[in-house]
Length: 527
Ligand code: NAP
View (cartoon, helix red, strand yellow):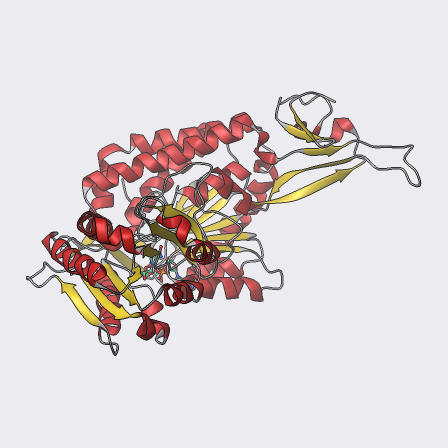
């Protein structure tokens, strides 16, 4: 059941006066439930509860924490059809996508449960004392990761489940031992509240402290701003626009006590097509890329928004074929009228720039809130000289840049803003002939893909989902996979601490049986 209220710890609350509804973009009507924006008082309550919950949650046993994460997954599945129907009614996305994203969300929670259960993620590092060392004795030093404190997570519009209420950021923060306050995304507040109810049930069933989780509604930037400024909040996770992410980052930096903001923001994901590959495979590449550009109505952070190639007949053939293929695809619905409004405005701004040519645009009538897929072309020189063309057009849009030479191609890549991904399309041994292109790409992105598409982000330990600014605010961390837990912890050392007072992870006996670096040797042995 959806009540339209905030979860402040275990309690439902709605003290405010500002109300809003979510919107069904497929039907182009408001959904029935009314949500009430959280008040300053409710924000304070949620942060105070999280602060007191942290005292217990930060050192709760690994078995209990894993049980909490697994029970959240169970409770999300128990929401069954209600969750899927609510998700579809608030996002315009099809049932298959809703079920796929639920599967991914549950899998991420269980993955973190396994990580916590195994226990070695704390990176325990021990250097035993050398009391007789000359000229001075060496102390006993023992280091491990400890949680930062209450984390605020901003739900993402384009992933109502996997990067929202119980998504990757939340699962990683819980695994680290941090209480979470979610600033629910206004476009899918109902989906958010259902998932919040699952988290609260799981917290109660597994004996977590009240306040380990809160879910605050808001439609507007005030609640988010107050949360980021709140002295009890110690870190922030965000997925969305560069404007939003940067504003929160600046706000966090201006606090008396600055805190980290891990924002995953815009990216146009350059795809470099080397000449031999375009010549031999332009038809199949065109088909593959028409699908990738339009997948999920282009609403993925890894959408291929920029295709770079060397000017000539082969690239022209590719552009003609891509244009034919992309307009064959039926247009699909965007997440919300505001997103389609932003798509139309940004697309219009891009295609009216000097020297830009529209190669394909879906020309038939489309339903309200459905996006017209578009492909445009531009010369390398015009692209270099026009920063507007480097900006993300969030939706089914891609720009093909026709470079005069390999040198120009390299210069374009080197001057791009930071990106989540870069893709290299190469024939046989072609990649080896362009080491400078590969190196330029590596310098601007977080992940390179060989002969594939950037859409589709595997959740596994070796995934990097992040990259140089502005694709993310800190390129040293990933937002996907188990290593994303490192955003919510800090290294902490004990010097000459009595063995019985150390956490189990660092005790001589290694009672948890975890893998540790002891005197420079990785081992599960006791000391
Ligand atoms: P958004 O506008 O960045 O908003 C994301 C969340 O941050 C929302 O909850 C929003 O609150 C909040 N927020 C935004 N600006 C803020 C500020 N200055 N201070 C405090 N809170 C702020 O992103 P969106 O709603 O998901 O989509 C809008 C656009 O973002 C899209 O059209 C697209 O261009 C881009 N986007 C990019 C990606 C990507 O992965 N690259 C993903 C999603 C969206 P309110 O909504 O309540 O104002």
